[in-house]
Image (cartoon, rainbow, N blue to C red; front, side, top):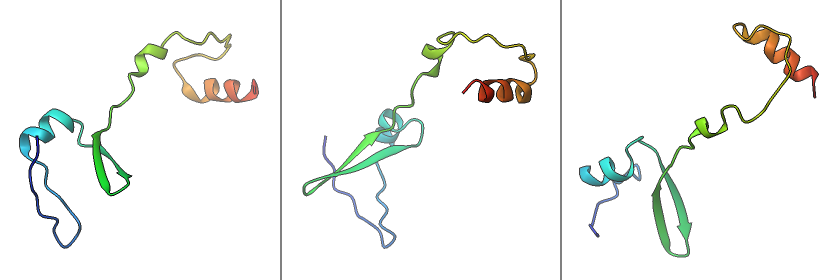
Length: 77
């Protein structure tokens, strides 16, 4: 797929609607320069759920209140 687009005075380029839906669904992209090319890639957000239950910690603090949990974790450093 190719298309020609104008760059406005502020340096903006409008991506075609179907490209935005397909490749920039979260509204964020990565811009990278390779030689004479400007590459626009979708920003893929990591799935943090894969890290759930990954680390075991022995805590005395009540998990319903974050402040004591944070304090206890920082003490363990």
